[in-house]
Amino acid sequence: MKKVILVSTLLSVISFYSFSQVIKIGNGIDISSMENSKFNLLPNKRTGYVGTIGLDYFEHKYFYLSSEIGYLQKGGKDAIFFTDQSGQPLSESKVDIRLDYLHINTTFRGRYAINNSNTVYVGIGPKIDIPVNSKISSNNDHFIALFQEDTPLDYRVKNLKTSFGLLPEIGFTYDMNKFRFDINAAYLVNFGRIDKNPINDELGNKVYNNTFLFRFNVGYKLN
Image (cartoon, rainbow, N blue to C red):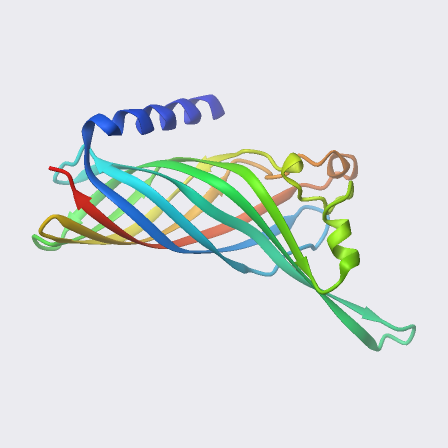
């Protein structure tokens, strides 16, 4: 399944140079959180940046294809409270982990024209997220060390998998002369865990991620 998704995505990326109709640039935010199968770690949402370039092509009255490549951030936040022997709070340690990915997707979009300028669409297609960097921020240096050592909390790139999956989306476009303005909301569906930490394997823990994307795209019609 992973090979099929990879091949179909790469073929689309190659082919749209010959059949493209709208080139576009997108910017926005993503909202992400983490899930662990055995531990309650980094469940709080963090807001990151997402930026893409792409092309809409094979345009038909009722459907078209859209392919994009870009950068996005995943991760999560947590707040850990320390107490004394009586249970009274002493301090709070905050942790914010950011995982940087190269993102590639191709979606099939069905669309409905409200009028000559306004269109709504829904789409779905394969996506690939390739880890390129990670960053940990905390007000407690001890926690920064934990996230960068051989522990269940080690989120260095070597312990992150390339994430294959699907990208369902919904959006609205407005065409004005040669320009297309696009508001898009999407969710990243990952096929399985995002980590490959051997220590987590020993503990039976798996790390999953939830990420929503919200973007504004500006496109230019090539023909």
